[in-house]
Image (cartoon, rainbow, N blue to C red):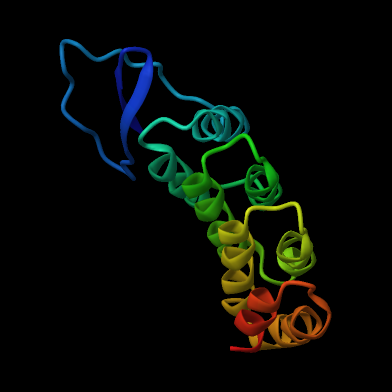
Length: 156
């Protein structure tokens, strides 16, 4: 991954899979980083809300030998993180783990203290799970959620 940093903030992120990229005189090569260390570092970068937060999360889904969905779910629940980053994390949770994430997404959708857009994204993420995982959870959200708009989205 190549990160463009200006003023101490990550301004853009670009992922490279197999191959190389042109060396630049102004670039610093940090060498190889283990997937676990990369997960921790990139989640923290996304949490701090630079302009490239969303771009930083996707490459983690490509990593081998690590389970990323718990970190994504934690980021989605972090009210200090930017809303767009949290919504991206919610979406990636649904792509990363299927049935294992249904309960976490359901809890996020039902959390009345949570930002509504993040809750709505959780309902959308639930709708993207395989049918056998999504239907029971969406029915439960549609029946029991206190927020009428969230119930409507779950029924839709």
